[in-house]
Image 1: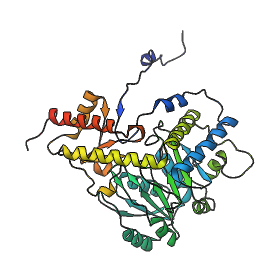
Image 2 (image 1 turned 120 degrees about the vertical axis):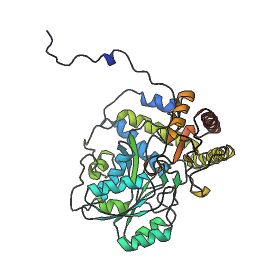
Image 3 (image 1 turned 180 degrees about the horizontal axis):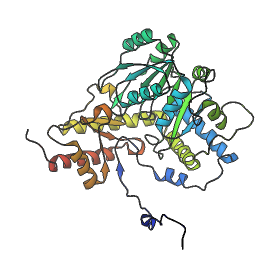
Image 4 (image 1 turned 180 degrees about the vertical axis):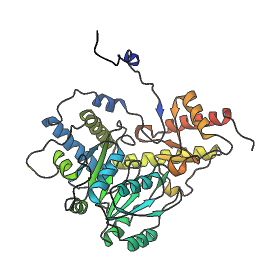
Length: 391
């Protein structure tokens, strides 16, 4: 008689077969065969010399993607949220002042995280779809004198691409670090970490890079390192402690790397291949492709009579488009119809944009005219078949 009180789960009697879907929401995006194949390579040890070589390759690829010479450049084991916490946990201590620019959900999340570790959080807010002028930022910096400012370059909840020009210089005038979230924008819109004076920059693997979720490129400037490595207290997270991570990634000039955590080997394979594909195309060509495809998409939407949520064309995020929810329709019915009929994902709003918009992500390999035509056809069918209220 078995001593086990929990029987074998019947749900595990057969393998799971994932459906193929067109991932045209705000992420994750579809993963090209090359990246899937790279991730299927045999597992080797996370402290083997071949893995260190792959990690070095990833570092170089991130430096190219971010346009930075920062030595402390690596990939956090986790999603973009993990990178956000890595940035905040290492540069903020209890009582430190932080300025969060909130014009969507990512500013809200950053403020929540900073608050949890005892930082003194001040915010400047813009309505969904809005941006901040450099004068507004300057006034807030002058008033609050923070040690760190957070800003989302690509606000995927509202579809806004925020200009970064001049903001780094403003922050540095007040002795403040600039932290930028580029999860939805990196590779899809021009971004120059060093030239734009960004002190900490991070992104995710699952957007323009088209790798599976689970790794998050990040880079720290020498100025950010000075703050992080001269703390009075230890970072609240051992897993995200920058001193340990710098050593594991070979960024601290020590002769040997010390075990910190078991790195996600398959994710490293995938991320390296994703960065290789970005380098093959070239950053400037990728930026231009995303721009022209987005413009083609926006024209098609307007020709259908749909309205874009972000009015200013220069502030539209080329990777994630926000469409005003068509009056009289239930946005949930539209997204459900499109998924059921076309096996295609588009999403509703997130955070402050819930109920206001539909969101379509065309990132990396999905950024093409063929993808646009597919989405436009699906939206046209949804508007014809979904119930429209007469009220």
